[in-house]
Structure formats: structure tokens, C-alpha cells
Image (tube, rainbow, N blue to C red; front, side, top):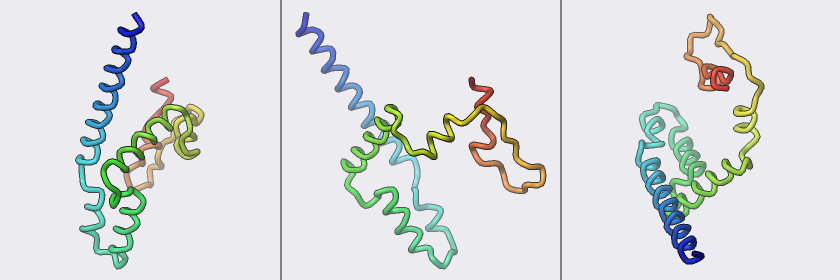
Amino acid sequence: MIRYIAKRLGISLMILVLGSLLMFVLTINSGDPLAEYRESNAQNRENLIKQRIEHMGLDDPWYVRYWNWLSGVFRAISGRTSTAATSMIWSPRRRVRPSASSSSPPSWPSCWAWSSVF
């Protein structure tokens, strides 16, 4: 019986790892994170590209990026995320409406009503 349970746990772990690897590959191939800066006419375009590469770790090998991505998933599941993300998720239930005079579209937190979800 213990052998059966160990076999099932091993298979389950392998499926989780392969599934997370598939999600990682789909995520990193979903788009070019530097596209907006390559098309930019800003004077500091090269500096912005370097900052994005450093921030996202685009110069790291795939397995280092995968490990960082996977550990970030586990940090989010365990609740050890940044305070900005935590405060956005667990903020009091209230509707934030953009002002009528605003010409730009509302950002994600202001157009999503958490109270409608709960």
C-alpha cells in the first residue's frame, strides 16, 4: 500500500512539474516584453531597455528564470507576496470609479470591483 501511494505521489509531482514547465514556456513565449521600448522614440530608450532586461531577468538562462518564476508562484500561494500586491488583493470591498473628466482609460484595480466577486 505504501508503495502504491509513493508511486501515485511521484506521478502527481511529475505532472505538476511538467505542467508548470509548460505554463512557463507559454508565458515566456506569449509576447515580447521589450516591444514597447523598441518602438519608442524616447531619448533614453536604450536605458529603458536595459532596465527592463535587468528587472525581468531576460539575460538569465531559461532554467534560472524558471526557478525564479516557480519560486514566485510558491511565494504567492503561501502568502509571502509584496505588500503592494497583498494590499491590492485584500483591500476593503469598495468600488473605485474613475472620474468623468479623466481622458485615459481606467487602470485594472480601478475598473475591477472586488465586491462583485465576493
